[in-house]
Length: 235
Picture: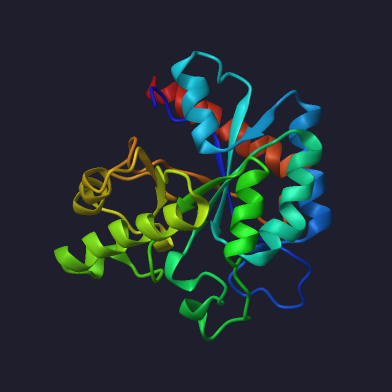
């Protein structure tokens, strides 16, 4: 991508009583956030659609929407709202846990993950399926061979499930260095998402903006304004 666009990072959209990791947005808040985007003439899109638009010079009013882990509530709660507004999104799926739960967060509230049928359904609705590794392991802690397997096997699994090429990756926990970014590129991905800006920032470590339950209209306005200011300073 020629410049870093605004890319929003979500995880789960569901009602909840306890959310110590701050990864859940209620359906009501999510609907309000999507309404806020639409009301300002912005359109939420998958990173696949965003990259295509940037290549054609048509990305000015687009905002990338991403969802990590692949929770069931993406299909049940997020997709109907996205479709209502004519939006798309990218969901990064933990390929070795399809139909399971967030075992990597064993000490925290259990959240179920989409199964094969749900993944196929959201793909047919226009959503992009990306990889979030096989096991949700922190990649910098893996040996070279283990890193390669997390990238290539997850890609193969998801392509078999969806019948479509998987071109995007998101680093578990946002952990990425130059070795991991190079490995993602070597594994055949077109882009990858990180969380924070770093020495690796670029096509294979795109920074994202966290969105949570506290992000009402004023906070969304501030986050978008801050992103635009930072982008101008780097221009």
